[in-house]
Length: 267
Ligand SMILES: [Zn+2]
Ligand SMILES: [Zn+2]
Image 1 (cartoon, helix red, strand yellow):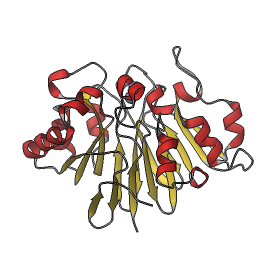
Image 2 (cartoon, protein in one colour):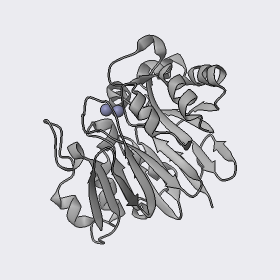
Image 3 (cartoon, helix red, strand yellow):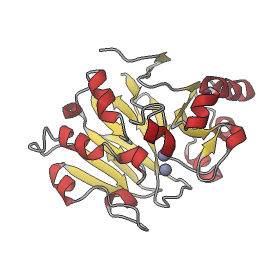
Image 4 (tube, protein in one colour):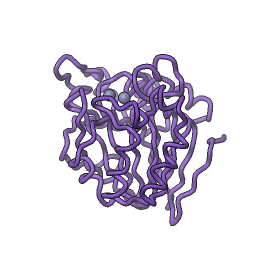
């Protein structure tokens, strides 16, 4: 058994997406021979092409909320998953805003895409569903898209939680309990905290309550990238004793009995 994460992009927020300070292509989770792509924002398809990852081998597209840094490459990726739109296959999972529209956001996915795939599910916090046969808990978020959700995947190699853009919130932390790997959207360094997003210091609460084997920072904004995310991650590791790594574009994380990190995925 192996579960693998590939970061197609570790940038996040408006300006990192606009200027592609880092790619904003989201994350691929591979487990049990299935490939799930979470939040395919700008740069997802470009980076898949760079590492020879075929969109036709994607089995699920999962979108946490309706902001472009999380969904902009989704439509083309879905066409890829469905082999140019001719093969009805794959799963789509998205927040209410993405799937149906909410408070002026979305919908981003329409009947056109729903007809293409084998299964499509609109999810809210508290739902439990199977995605590619993996039991998945839909977790909360406190974000400007009020229907935003995170995901807690119960893989054979342990629970991997993907926290969505959120303001620091005890309920979100509680819902991540039991995670072996915790992926956090640390958009800002502590000194530049903004509403609706996590900053470095917020990771301390997650680390102390969840005690995962590994915390991965992603969705980093321009300020965070310029300040040096590596040092921010080291600060959390030193403060909590929890292994903490700032992910990099095309980084892979292999989860078996151990957790091994490779800097850049190669063909
Ligand atoms: Zn975002
Ligand atoms: Zn957002």
